[in-house]
Image (cartoon, rainbow, N blue to C red; front, side, top):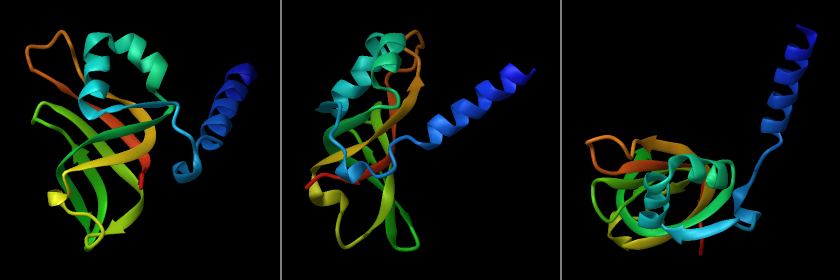
Length: 136
């Protein structure tokens, strides 16, 4: 029982020591939003091992801005409605700094997983990025 407790405690400490500020970090991988989703759809297990908990830089067209109290707190990147990169921003951005008409943007964040199933009849899926920042 003590070993199990220490295992969970160690895991919690290690996860809290992860990527605190992605703006200053070098991405481990760079790709388009379509390529990110395709990697998970092609082989979800391999992509999970390769990308999850890694800083990834992704470029893609803005599909939707998620706003809260006049600030942009998230972005959805996609060239269609099926293959989406859902981004939670580390620091809210004012709506004056970014708009849906900006076209293709580049964002860097920590990949936290994939929502979708390549075996499903439903097309596409969603790659999740957290603690993300815009790349200038």
